[in-house]
Length: 158
Length: 158
Image (cartoon, rainbow over all chains, first blue to last red; front, side):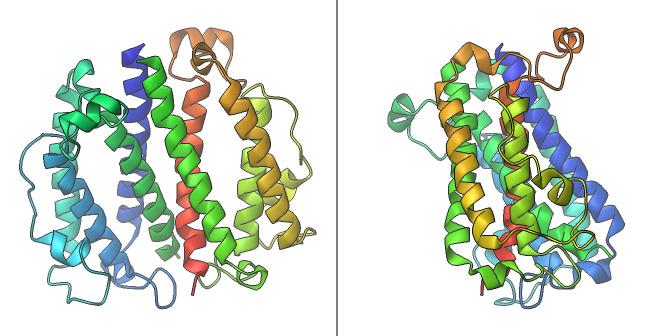
């Protein structure tokens, strides 16, 4: 039963990553530089944001250090257009592939029991009262977060 | 363990419904009539689509008949602007509340084991080979679908 739960959650995550890959393949760098709607976030900001959020999953899930901690300041801690984006769309596309490859290796080698252990942003004391705040729950929440921004990025298509 | 997992999935679903409620409270009917981005879906179409998708969860989860089957033709089977929307934003807001109240009553009274039974769009034969295609998996997928369109509806805010 535990394996069935885990498969349900990981299948949904992998599907959304794949849908994002497919969308990115269709969008040109020029399209990524456009706003998803007038005066809203640009595609490149959302791509950088998604890379940075996935990168932060490494320490959160105890998989290791972030690969691109320099992205947090521009893409997580600041709204779009408040700081210059000093990285190209082409580089961000590469980072997106690299971080997902890294994550996917760790995800597929995690043992079933480990998914139900606490993640790194909750104390042992709180976790004892709130057992649902485990590593697998991070995947559920991050899949929803990815879906939210995927719906926005899809607006850049012709 | 089964209860912890069900809580994880239902918490995520309830959170997204609540975030959508909060967003709808902020948007005027006039804003809902606008496109989320030039030449893309209108807010009212997305709201009707989300009502119709939730309504379809009733038969899918064996909770009963749809409340608003007349919405399927306009909001599921046809893209926006291909058919006139013959229902007001005010009515759709009311339908959104009603369908979610109905769903939430069924969801909270379902027993833990029932969440791991097959939903109504898969044969018993297929389900025996693919146990992850259960009722709880519908909630995971519909939460992602809601998040996708919530990200789009949020663009209507000033």
